[in-house]
Length: 59
Image 1 (cartoon, rainbow, N blue to C red):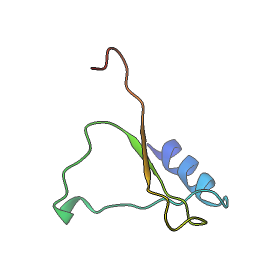
Image 2: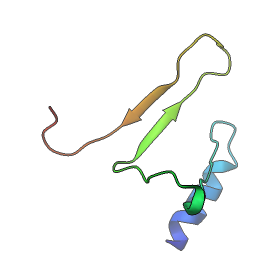
Image 3: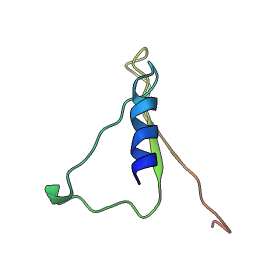
Image 4: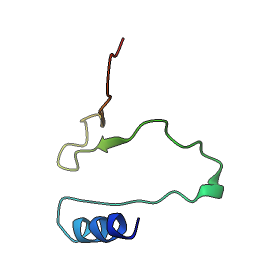
């Protein structure tokens, strides 16, 4: 896990990445799958886009 955290810290130094951490005790359920929420600061009318990858068959 240390290597993963170090990688995230390196990525967060770039201009195109924001890392936000939700405390476990916030009450929000953990996501079953990894996902990325894309937002577009240069277009206030653009809706955010949720990107997710899945393995196997998807209905």
